[in-house]
Amino acid sequence: MRGRAAWETVSLPNLRTEKGTMDSGNQCHAGEHRASSMTDDRNRLEQFIAGNSGKPCVVVQGLGFVGAVMALVCANAHGQDYAVIGVDRADESGRRRVSSLNEGVFPLVADDPKIEQLYRSARERNNLCATCDDYAYSLGDVIVVDINLDVDKTHGELNDLGGYSVDLTAFRAAMRAIARRCREDVLVLVETTVPPGTCEQLVKPVIEEGLRQRGLATQRFRLGHSCERVMPGRNYVDSIRNFYRAYAGIDDRSADATAAFLSTVVRTDEYPLTRLAGTNASEMTKVLENAYRAMNIAFIAEWSRFAEEAGVNLYEVIDAIRKRPTHSNMMYPGVGVGGYCLTKDPLMAAWARKTLFGSEETLPQSEAAVRINDRMPVDAFRFIERAAGRALAGAGVVLLGVSYRGDVGDTRSTPVGPLFDLLVGAGSRVTLHDPYVSYWPEKELAVERDLSAALAGAVDLVVVSTGHALYRCRNTVDALQALKPAVIIDTLGLFSAADIERLQTRHRVKVLGRGDL
Image 1 (cartoon, one colour):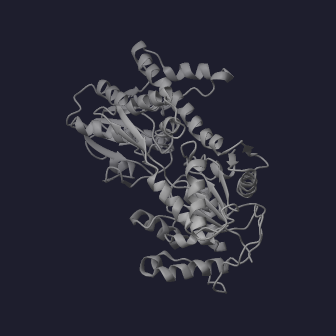
Image 2 (cartoon, rainbow, N blue to C red):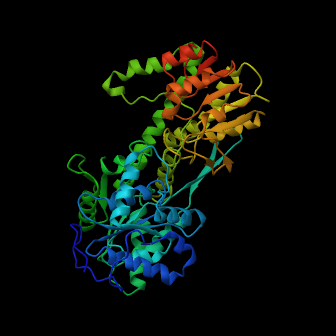
Image 3 (cartoon, rainbow, N blue to C red):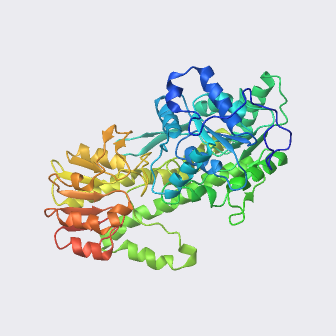
């Protein structure tokens, strides 16, 4: 029997069918995943568990931007020595992530050295592997759900939000995959951002039905929710390990188990957990905090245009206002909102209010925030049109950054996407640069990672579109200064006053939200 962890309330059955350990570095090799039969894959998982004798098993469902790093943090947990199995879909992208993780290359790129440190540590300890086989769920003492749940949005010609819907079909199928395999005393922890009501109305009955169909008890499993607050970038790992968490369970037993598990992963001595009354409240926490942030961003969009018209530097105005503690989180201007959360979570909450809780209303202000934010790239494009001083047709434009956020290689819902489309539609010759992205999957385009190469052609406009630290450094300003006279457009307020002054000696410089330039 494996060692009992703090969150376990019952004895655990012996899940191992094979004894012994595997040689260092030979567990769960992804090359074999592609070629071997399902039986071979399951044998490897059993051998992985045998090689981690005495360790409770954590299975992380989903190896994307949240799950992959969550698996690393669990494999390096401070409060318990775990065997960790990551599970991804058996499609091309899922197999690629599984292969990469098992073969010694972490599947995500981010500017956080702790990721590589934790990954190397897990490799040395041989307590992390990945698979596409749902059989892994039968081995888990804890199953952490970190899969995508999307909002389907439709847009008009100028990125106007038309309609939206939430399709729970794929999420329900993922829960059924767990329910077909999981133990009757498992702890299922949902970290995915879901519509309020999902754990009670979908996850709980699906797991109960799966256990019932296998003749297992339906009252012993634990189900908790704790919204992830992952922030890709320099503090990627710390946004999981060293940050506050709210949590809840479908009952007290589930909440207790959730807290005990999270306490082995999160530094709760410095970042104590906040317990909420139920999973509806925990689920609402994430979508409300993201709706709040989305509304803050939307609020400043119209003020950016006003400042440009009034000849005002909005950045210095905001800096002055931020000195008031009550206004310290006022947002700065920008090219738009991207990523996986703020672009959809307010809509997810509005959908839940009407669909899961039977209200006649949605959340109109939250919906309006998404609508405004979706149009921000259009506003940025019009700013570029005015600043260019020439027709955009035939203009050589270099976009510095395609990721939605600085210092990460994440192009999901990036606002640079609509901006790129508008520039191409206007007839511009667009060159893409990003130090973290070599391929833009949503556009199926190669992206230049070498700045000198990106700037080597005929350049009429350079647009700073992502807040990468590289674009703030002196070498970038030097490279821009070496260009023939052009128009430099900063959509994020990235350049310092000294940078702008220097660039103005050779180029025309415009900054979104600054009417004083």
